[in-house]
Image 1 (spheres, rainbow over the protein chains, first blue to last red):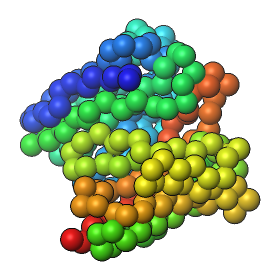
Image 2 (image 1 turned 90 degrees about the vertical axis):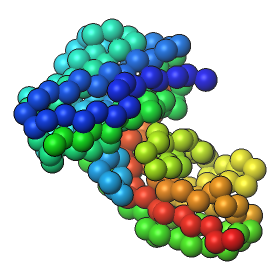
Image 3 (image 1 turned 120 degrees about the vertical axis):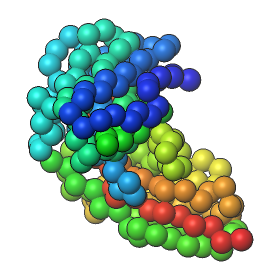
Image 4 (image 1 turned 180 degrees about the horizontal axis):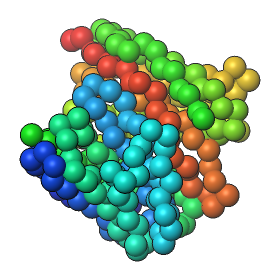
Length: 116
Length: 116
């Protein structure tokens, strides 16, 4: 089946630093990547949608200057949390839609971000 | 935008009994309804999904029913086993012209506990 690799799986950083999270589709081309955030014991909330080669579309309430998304190739999308603060601590997870039109979405393994 | 309500938030059943989780959605344009099982700190795993042109789908002990008119869909797990214990999320989306699902709107989740 289709595999989405997400790195790092966990990261601890100091307040004010930036953190980059990568999602790679290993055996398919991901025309669209979705980024979600999940706080403890809560649901997954869609943050933004990125299409290869174009600007990401952000959901209401998500700061685009804080959560930078780059989808420069059909196999890689990155989410950079800029000037991270403790309230950004969360589980971030990507999912990919492939170019073959398969309806199912493929999830990365998630990144647990802890900001001190 | 889409709004998905999920009930109950916690469900405890005896091993071997059936479990039912219910969801409602608001956007009549949604036509794809997947169910995910998530263990702590892991990625969501797709367990079953249904398109709006189908009223019911079954896969071994798991079934999903959809009432498009009432905008609600349910997950049914029969003969529950201890390994079924997890958090279950329903979601709603629509299938794009390219064939893949758009970003998912998740319900708040149901913590299913299987009592031995």
